[in-house]
Length: 284
Image (cartoon, rainbow, N blue to C red; front, side, top):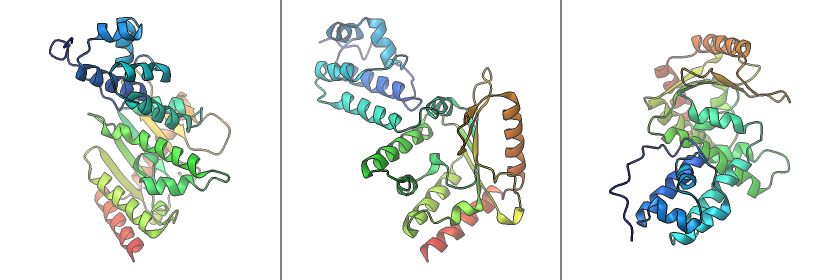
């Protein structure tokens, strides 16, 4: 049996950057555990070594048929096919216009988020997300669960070795809006408190007392990418217009709005205290 774990250079790849990279990372892990070199597995799968390398690096999208062949070659049962099926189902639950945004979100160095109505998806608990997603008329229980899985998958970017810095401002009304039972709301407040204590998350609340109406037209997120790439924004809107934009005028206006909203927000310490007070309200 060929052993390559000691001779093949270690790859530092963050599996939470994208589904392709997550699959490729798992593929490489199982290949090495089975003692297969890239050349041996490539020959078994009738692929070139470069094609297998592209799969493991996340530069090529795998097919379900290929995942099954790898499972068979490495005696994994349905491990990789099951993983790919879950990843594909999760992405299929997202609107086509939203999928490009996921790539920007995954690659962002920082995200500036203004949320006027609901807890941001990246910080939602599973129960809170289920309550929100189940309100769509006509949605079946299976469809809701698939969408919940997709939303939880998105949160994988927070598990990266170097997760994006999150600068989040939430309207005070979000804390009081009863989208679910009190125990679910209490659990969501606990999640916000935990997030607010993390070093790479700045969580602030815009209080009613600020009388700031600039963000009432809708929520939005600004993704700051690498220095070589322009920022990109996602606008949460009911309109049929494009919701993902990198137009310079849009970015300038949204950045101005974000700064004006954040200027009226409570400090991080005050914000966490308000969340604690709200959690006691949901407890009693």
